[in-house]
Length: 544
Image (cartoon, rainbow, N blue to C red):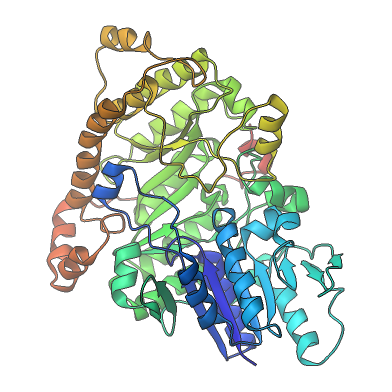
């Protein structure tokens, strides 16, 4: 039986898809993996032009070419986020025309978050939960001619349009996660290139997407309930999603060892977890000890840090293991706006978290803090509160300044509709912020903290998003330039090539120059002899 697995999203990172692809290969060896989506490679030039993150535009001819390559299978299974939902529907419709006998499935974030929209595509089924065990049960029924329309985590649609909406399976346990294969990485994989069609993924593709990095997820779940996040729907579906689930530290370390056998140049692992720091101290210590023993010299990055879960003991253990930087969500300096986003995190705790992170600045790159701008519900005071917080935060740091975008069917969409606001959906580029004075100030504060009197004068010109105001497009561009060069300098000085992508870092690694530079540029952190092993952090304390 031939199965084609298709990822419709940005580049080739596709973490959940790779995990599912490996599981499907285990069940059915005749499974091929395909990636569709123009690469949004990170670059100084794209950042300068603010085109990084633009959704690719395909022509009808492109869609035909994609469908022709995918349609010759018994089962065609798609995975996509909401930003690529329309593109996925286009390809599905063409496959249906070309092969009416193909069984077409659609999984990934979009069918989970917005199933009523996804089921309207010309599909036979959508996956509305975790897919591994559900697909295994479905495949067994399909291969043996048994009825499958009762299987949970799926909605099924008959050819006459009748829809069977099934419930959800329990979430996978830690033991279940440990039993899964590592995500598919390397081997035979195919990427769609405009004007060329599908060609095999090469080392160069990995270097252009990830540089010397490898993207991973260790933990699943989040104790928060932020209205702008797809996790709100996951939690509505199953309240247990708030609990942190994870494979064992040994499994995670073994996964990285497996990847480095394929690509020895991988020297930085980027953890895309929602709540990595939610792990209890004992698990963190086991992870850090194993990492130091098995992967000494490989550094890692932790995204999705929650301010209330930043504790010095965890940073000591993780920095000792090789943590080189973190990314923390702040979103706003206004407690009113944090309440609006359902992020009950007091501003003093945000500042304390930044101070703890700053204690490790000798051993880490500058942390990155996330902020949401261009929210029409903000008042001028909310904007001022955010600017004041950025002015006070312990330095150094950088920021991801993100224009508000809506994921359909989330709590935030309902809030905005109730208030009568029209906000761009997630398929619009959230890196394209409005060129307002206040947004210009955000970028200025990344590399320069003006004297207090000058800052107070600048604050007088800041306005709320909905107030009449001038556009400062040229000024915003000019103010962003020093920040871009500063970021590039920091990463080059550190010898960190997971953000600076392409072949340069690879050749520096291959010739041994990079390893020599690391000995000079990266000071070693010595962990205290006996770290404080506090009790596990509960969900309640994470929300305090």
